[in-house]
Image: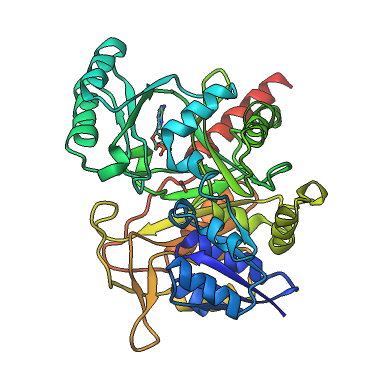
Length: 443
Ligand code: AMP
Ligand code: GLY
């Protein structure tokens, strides 16, 4: 009897656990701590653990075959090292390998060492030198705290004044605590952002489908930065040519560079890329995990057995794995709580969801993935419990159809103060229109 453990409580973990539950070889998946979505899904069961020691004890007691780590925080805390020391199988990078995400300075120096295209930069711990650098380079500039800062560590400064303020809040006033002991100041890159995620066993690479996230809270990419307000897959911004270039110039050098430095990386690796106007891909950031909400549309399109892929990764045989995708587009819209991202309100009642959750058991063309939700004390009601609440994800023949299907589903779901963007996928739809027109003109 194969039992798995998924660590985390967001939409990403709901989507991963849901996909793993479709493997005929897997009997049960525990999610620690999970949410209302994972509590209600067949084959899934929530367990209320978050400390590494209690997760190890649980995995040993339940003979967990493989543990899969969703978020970066446990990876940064060394959960993989601790599980491996206890002889438990776990999918995710070690603490040292996770530095690609947990230290921006490590990531930038690594990219410089291995000739991986990224924005030019300098790192600072002295505010005086940082202020001088701003005057020398001039805005626009991007100021990044070195450490993990839950999405609050990056300031895109359009004026020198904004850049000086960012240096003061991070480096002098320490608004982000120790995460801001050092900063990176980098060149502002113009272009389109895409998410390029692969699985790796440390030697071999298996690219997942491409996707595009929508980081800002409001339509037309305005408003504050968030964890991500929606995503779709695949994205037309990564052409087959560019895909090959990204593998050759970015992904391969990362994996071989890590290997050469004696760092073994097994897990998902997420490269946040910017595609410049002359079709060059440059790295904005690495994450040592899947993206949220990118995982939701990607998992809805995945036709292969995710458990089998992860087994291959753990055994170092990802070169023997093949991966199949639904040829359609999947698009997910995030519904966020009132006050997100600064101060999300909790315990708003969600209505209209139960009917859809029943319907999706027999209809695989959509799925409502939960993030910040919990089941009320009456054991029937669904309540909000965090910033991003749901990700309404649907398939369609192209981005436009997937978009229409997802927005139509979302009309059924309500909670007070809910926030969602109205333009998820719009940039991709425009681009597709433009490239179709160019093709028509050349024929
Ligand atoms: P990060 O957490 O590094 O992905 O940064 C958060 C967001 O800031 C990214 O999604 C981009 O929109 C923006 N960003 C980061 N670095 C740059 C850069 N060098 N040029 C332009 N925008 C950037
Ligand atoms: N969606 C962006 C991230 O997961 O970091």
